[in-house]
Amino acid sequence: MSTVTAPQATATATWSIDPVHSTAQFKVKHMMISNVKGEFTAITGKLELNDADITKSRVEASIDAATINTREPQRDAHLKSADFLDVEKFATLTFKSTRVSKVTVDELAVEGDLSIHGVTRNVVFAVEGPSAPIKDPWGNTRLGISATTRINRKDFGLVWNSTLETGGILVGDEVTITVDVEFVKG
Image (cartoon, rainbow, N blue to C red):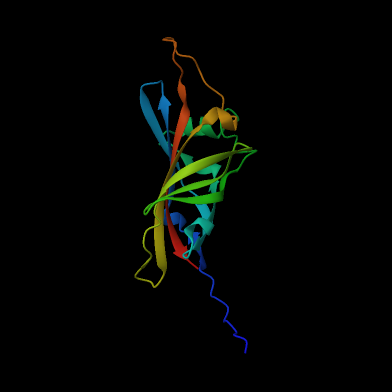
């Protein structure tokens, strides 16, 4: 007598980034003395979350480069120009995961391809989460993550700078990127 096993239900669910409740922020040294912070106000993407084995999960995100905001219109215009992001040629910044590793119970290392200014490099985000899913007042299921990485902007072709009279530089090379994302299931 043969035994027939029922197909197992997939443990993977699709979650979409809620752009209203998600941010992509950065900080970089200004004149070697303080940090300038900014954000991109348009982020979209999806998460394929595997509840049975989180290391089999995948995430993709896209950011509209023209939505950069540092609260200083002249600086924002310069950052959008060919000196930096060149948003006319490179309209989006993207991330696509290639590997997810569990670091602790509440922390992941998400490795993937980050594309900025037409250059793609492998980076690793330290991820807190995902949080436990919850139902919102409208019946949607949500969860969140917070992810951080550091890059050298020159690795992405963002090389413009200016030397200061004191011998320092106007813009630091190291950029910290922090992404706080709320996902909606379905």
